[in-house]
Image (tube, rainbow over all chains, first blue to last red; front, side, top):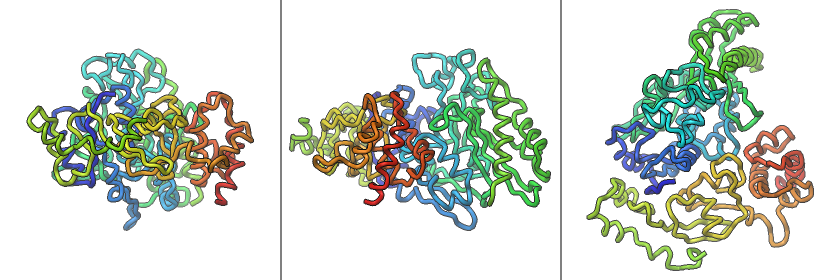
Length: 338
Length: 206
């Protein structure tokens, strides 16, 4: 690990002030010379690998008391960005009213990592693409813009089939983000000029020609919280992976339904493990709305969710697997007793 | 161990005079901020190659150290304080061998900076026994033969104690799920589950 200057921010204004110097640079956020440190589970890992090389770290853990609150107000769920994954997953109100949120957090990482990692850091987790994580490969457009993509014709079993470009096929690795995008969450972003709120769906960027630009966050900005409108007791997160626990998704689905007398009034579907960014399957949702649910409908919806998917040599199985995950998750959500 | 026994180790490094002395040179932008009121209590330096004073409270004892800012809690424990019970397996937060409790929560010491852990109570495997009397989880691992090589065992035991206290040791399925962050390449998993079940009632009863 390269050496860095360490600074601990006592409160949000001190953190923003300390990070402000980062906003002067033209580097993408992930290459900013000053990085905030929360749980550290991604940042320190990637610093040890020499993938991230900040010259200074601002420890924002003292912000927890102000930015870690979780509350249900006026039928909306507000999640502070410094709340730890384990604490939100264990919250009984969230388990009851937003099972897709609780399960997406509970099924991620390990108990130790969930105790450490914050919600804000979790949605910014970097890809697990092995070529991105191994600096001995020169070709990685995300890490080394313009250098090519070693995964394209390399080992790409874990790579994305949706939202890809000819520059990058790295999978977005997180789970919680699928719940957020499915439920139309918004995200609060705090910087030196105050706090702005954007739809969560506008936080992440598809790789396109610039895979090094992963989010619309500017250097010097911090995620301060998330808001989920409404209550979604009929919601579920299904995650299929190589191991039963402590593994990233090969394919996952976040589902939320509003059902009356067997008819789907509203439907939300987001996909994980298969796309380059948190992925909302809006066309598939449209097929569900207003329909009586049955097996044939579930299969049709799953087909639509993967229209336009494109595979490389080792990841074609994800398309069929992803469809089955969507269909099974829909059944799971439909048959929930709420 | 020099850091621990040297009473000068904290006072010999004076950040304020250091900042003043370095102000004329090429400065990293953070330096100016480090001197402002909001952050003056923070051990910070614009020259990242110089050691930083930190006090870590481990198993009830304060340890005053002068360390590189990059030092993790794991390396501070093993290399500076001399507590080698916590093990370095992967050093990337994947294996769980370095698990310790910070303020009673199980965390990975290899992904926690020592500087972030100041002012917090750290508990390691060395802090569990009461004299010669082992902690119930330590005794259960012996009774159930819950290891072969033993390298993952300190992390397993720290994680298992937290697993019980979190309320996740009610059945085999929960124990396997909530202990999945601790890898055992000898595959002593069935015996580890048995050990957690043996110790759970005694830990919960107090």
